[in-house]
Amino acid sequence: MRRAAAFLALLLCLYWTRAQGESGGLTGNDITQTEIQSEILGVKSTSDQTNITPDIWAELKELRDMAIQHSVELRNSKSKMENLEQENTAIQARLTASEWKNAVLENVVKELQRENTDLLDRVTSLEDKNKVLEARMNASENEVEELKRQSADMMTRMNVSENEVEELKRQSADQPKVAFSLGLTDDGQIGPFNTDITLKYSKVFTNFGQVYSPTTGVFTAPVRGAYYFSFTTVDTRSGVNTRVYLHHNDKKVLSSHNRNANGSESVSNSMVLQLEKGDVVYLVLPTGHTVYDDTNDYTTFNGFLLFPL
Image (cartoon, rainbow, N blue to C red; front, top):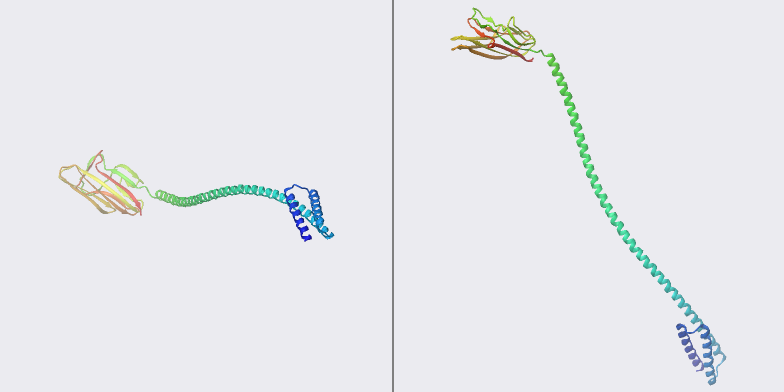
């Protein structure tokens, strides 16, 4: 019973001491002195009633020391708690700053992503434009190649044409210039005669190549070829027949005939002949017929080379 009463008194002292330590009202020395005084008073009051052995005092002292140690540890724990709270506040501030920085970084990242998207769009647009330009360049290159090919073809054609022109010039230079146009006479009526005569056209309008002889009235072919001949005759007599023959060498090949009813009627005809070099062509007035010509050139004879053969 004595020990139980002493232990109960000690517990009350510890409770009071802890309350004072938490409120900060007493220092460590005050607690010690108060506890000692309380313990002395309590023990003395108790010792007046009971007999306490020396072991109880030793246990009380040990308990007192333990209470003081626990009080100090509580104050140290409180200081540590305050330090931890300060550190927590600093950490929270750092976290807030980090969150703000993270938000700023997120905005920067979003802005960079947007700029990157814009750059990608621009790059894509530039690539599309580049493809279009490449297509145009390829088309232009194809057009240039086509123009070069066409130019080469034109140059080839021009060379061929120049060669053909040169050949034509050479052929033209080699081809004799054959053409004549003649009038019969300025003396009026010719004939009639008792025999067939060769008409000698004395008025020479043109005689390229000097192929017609006014002296003989004969055209002589300078080359083998195709020749064109035409003639016109007039007779001023009435009631007579007008007739002229075209001869190739000794052969009559063309005849013109007309009976004049009222006088001054003309006869015309033409022919293409294939002649060998040296062949002759001339007009013959038959026996008993006449022709008429004067300065008006009613009776004419014409011929020229169409092409050599």
